[in-house]
Amino acid sequence: MEKIGNRKLVYSQNFIVPEGERVDITSNLEGWNLRIVIAFDPKGSEQGVTIKPIDDYALITFIKWDNSLGTCTSKPLELGTHHKGNKLFFSATNYCISGTNKLTFQLLMGDDNV
Image (cartoon, rainbow, N blue to C red):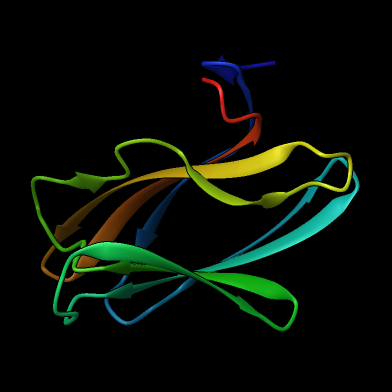
């Protein structure tokens, strides 16, 4: 088992995402069938991250994460709560070269105290 701070690392993956494409993740986390769709919006007005519940999945959009030197979450962001009460967080880093994104995406389970 790997941990970052007090949180258990439950998923970690690298993706190379061509311009205009999305990442669709389905994972079973301790009995929770979780689906996450990740999109990139390079044309947004200001850099950030949005999380929206849509039907049976969470849509995470990285806005203006189009820097070839890299962009990242400065700390894990809360995504939801497992039915056993543990909170689910995600961390991400991204490098964008000529419209292609190299994304590292991690899911962590634990509490707010790192």
